[in-house]
Length: 373
Image 1 (tube, rainbow, N blue to C red):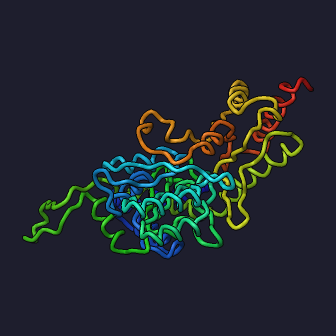
Image 2 (spheres, rainbow, N blue to C red):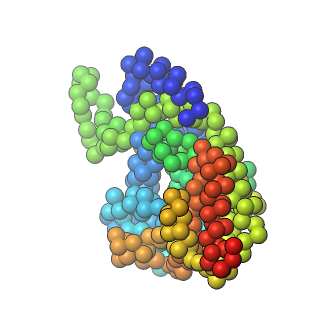
Image 3 (cartoon, rainbow, N blue to C red):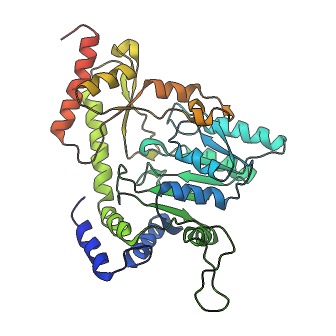
């Protein structure tokens, strides 16, 4: 927290508008409309935004949706919420995002078979956009809606354009571990204002206007309690004031790690695509076990023993028990990234002293494994 959050929350408490309506929610939506040049609706979290995005594009029983296999489960879960079927696609080794060539081959083949998927979800991983131009091109060619899961990359850009604002629907998260946070909360944006209006309707329990004018609870559709609270909106608005600062802090952390490991073989920073601005939400490295001296899994265990929390790169969805029954196109790249990937401590409030401790432990792991001091 930077300091302005408390004042904004106090203003909300003083107003009495603490639930799912109020000036802070309106102001937050307007700020995202300014940043993305899309219509916007504030929601309870990124997962609820993903669910409504999937519902908006018409996913129903048995409808297929392309999802990267290398992702957090929320993207696949949202498809299943509507009884859809995810089809998992492999990653590109150049940026770890959805492989655009595989997607083109898949959609072209499905078009010939007259069974195109209902949508494509692209996930911008760890703070970097996937390669959107070829993905958008093939989606437009086949008239398949593109949903951008930008939960991990608020503040990132693709060829100068704001992440999450290039497809048909974009989704953001303000969860506690994101670059900025409300402790929760999410946002759905779209250039189609009618879709955003529909999402807003669903998010407030799909309450219709009462034809009798008596403010009765009238419902013609099933809705959800997915609206963001005014309190959370106040916190996120204050956090947005320091978005650029938070992004720079994350990038500083990633590049300090990179420089701290520059002389070590077998440990490399996640690719930084030259046509994109990578926020480095998480500092992710690939380990070559032969060169480094130990596997990524052994390095994570070594760091854990030193009270340093590190994690693997996402476990691919096609390897998850809940999703093994679904089709996967490729998968070996994602499996390799998971097997060799390590996410190091990346918080914006990580001190240089703390980070140097982590760097020292990683170096210690390498030299011990190689039998050197």
